Image (tube, rainbow, N blue to C red; front, side, top):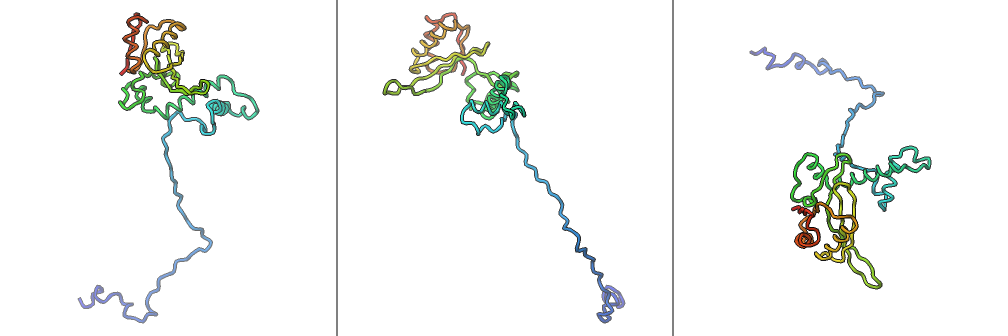
Length: 231
């Protein structure tokens, strides 16, 4: 055990330092450039298929349509050639898709998959339909909007609008309401029927003026019309 290398170590440890083995130095090439491994960083963003080009550049809807139409027109737009009417129509449809995709993406997914809307959806009471050809949401029936401030002489008054939309032809008719009560609505409905004819079915939400209209209209205004209410 006395001569065991584990206790005494290698023989050169007992000799002078000049006899100890020297560690060879690694050769360094001064001309060698620093080696760095390339690192790739990716940023993934989910984008809907309804985005349009730079909508913030336009102050008016007309300008937004023109910018979008020129981007669809391509290189020819740089040669002072106006986009065609078809390009303007395509631009309007693209803007509509973008707006609906930003505001009602969940509703679009529900309609395309045949699922019901969540109770918190703003369109839950409007009975919307998804146009597969145009890839947009369409809402038919009648509904009110406003108020709008109008000026009569020196005084300002409120006015509302009521929109009638045909579910078959998609035609739109707008009447002016002086108030949101049932009588004002009945007069607008009477004007609508006088100009456009009697509809076979009316679709509305559960507005107070509409519910009062249902009782009155079935009595004397349009007894042959089927009235449908959405929740």
